[in-house]
Image 1 (tube, one colour):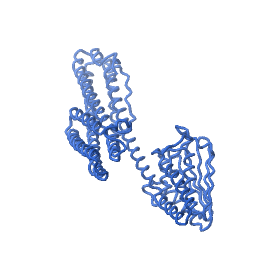
Image 2 (cartoon, rainbow, N blue to C red; image 1 turned 90 degrees about the vertical axis):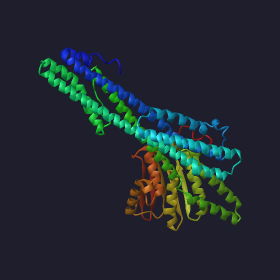
Image 3 (cartoon, one colour; image 1 turned 180 degrees about the vertical axis):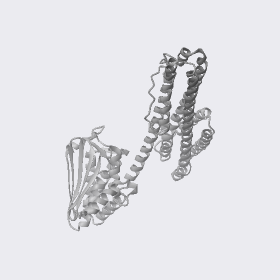
Image 4 (tube, rainbow, N blue to C red; image 1 turned 45 degrees about the vertical axis):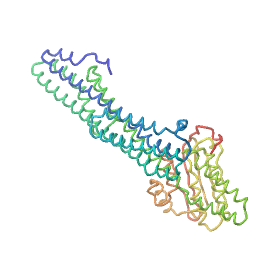
Length: 493
């Protein structure tokens, strides 16, 4: 922003009158000092928020995971630094305490200091509790007691620390709004004062003086209008000033402030999106709790009827099924792996429903190189079995097909079960369009549909086609997206 001033306000005023130069110069100096103070305050707030947001996003999750893995014996206090995904609790606490002690010295508002003081107290208590766990582990303390210490103290304290950080961020953001409001008032005051000075000068100056004064006022009015638009919620508004004077410098600083504000709001939105994804992943893991129980019952039954080989095969298939469910915590797997997952599922279900179930999987191998959110097809296959074939009271077929259609992938799950009437299809389609937490039925389908739209956009998702007594077809459309690594790479786990 520096170096743009070619014809300063002071020089313009000197051209009008030496008498007018003094008041105009005083106003300009006042404005520049105010802007310098504002920029300094704003940069401090942005710096504070950057530090606080780093710990808000990472501290609790990293601390909880690191301490849990030490309690279960995965790592120790001595070798935890060797795992790049974990942190030494004492080092993390030391860093947080040091950073927030610096923020306390820099923060000027009482509310922020109160919450930092609360945070520092909670951090001291957290360090003591970590010391208790370390001492218990070294003394060979009971695993259950250490887990209880995690649940009753550590997790609660990290929650409190995160709450303190979020309150601090809230008051810093409020402070930023106050600074912006104060700047807006200063700009408006400057406009009013300049207008009064111009009115006084019009009485003694010529048309030339009027034209020169307008050259000063127009950029300020532009900045004031943009400030009003931003205050009214139009965050895309920007000041377009090319006056080559202090007002352009002010406009550049104002535009920089607006850009930074948009970035902060986007970070908040991304944080909410991540939190929503986390909630969906938890829901995703809850789709099939009864399936495991039923399969284990089948294994027990096979052993009781002296079919150990079939029981072993079923255990191996179940292991493959849940290995793909876990997928090392990944949200996306290859379509080839998804096909293996539903094949394992159907092989297991075929043992239980061998007298009513036939199935066929026909997914074009060209799709194997692309990725898909895990647990996408299995809920659809489960729906076809339990709501289509099972109620048919006779043998039925399930078909799974996948084809490439330009830059989109079409996946279909079809059954020749009992089907649904037009009103039932319409009601179910509306139900799966809702957030899965709010659905009264079709939870698994709604979960799949919501995850696909969240990852790829509202133009993708599922459609349901059905006819009473003829069966049901569920079509799933997703975009082409290649795996970052070869789908044939060997999975360990």
